Image 1 (tube, helix red, strand yellow):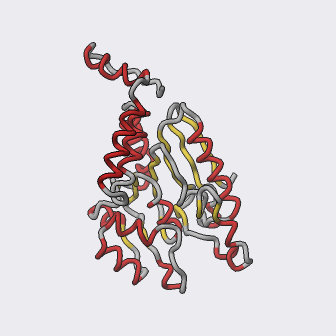
Image 2 (image 1 turned 90 degrees about the vertical axis):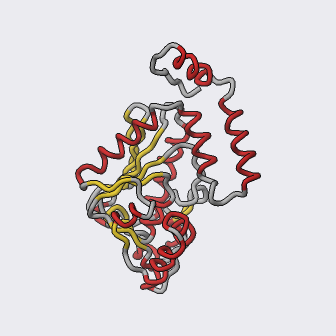
Length: 254
């Protein structure tokens, strides 16, 4: 499988598995990514996901051989967009664990996730302008949101790379660690998230994800809707009960 999913308790680990092609996106990868995300979203026992890649490159973007062969449309899916992920509507937290380069579509895939753990060797970038292309999988608007307009404009118009440490300093990356520590760090972050009530995490994430796009009135409505979505659930009863009884909460996700 070009993209694989592994379940570890409440954690899903999704892996790009085309290292011989620098994990460049082809039609098979886009389709299997969509299938893996469907499985992740539809399984109530899966609360958090980690997206990682085999090999030394996280993702080099689109497979240019496929584009040259006239198969460019196959690199996107109806539900997920490019790579089966960049336009995907999700409800559950997804962490990107990056040990190698994430440029072009690979950078756009990382920006479509919620949190990023990168390695000291990772570089990001949108080099499309160097090839007379346009980054059309979300990078042109997600990068300014993540970095601020000045830095993002510079990267977009020069096509130059951005080291992970600088991305961390500007707020795009959550943490930078040694390559061999990336997956472990991502799992630790996932564990911290999974210690909380999963339905409340999802409702909170869905509002925060719209914070830089919607106006305040829409966000007030979304916040109220999110709160109401957990009222009456078993976890809503368990949270205060566990606090009063001075014990860890036992979440059920329902």
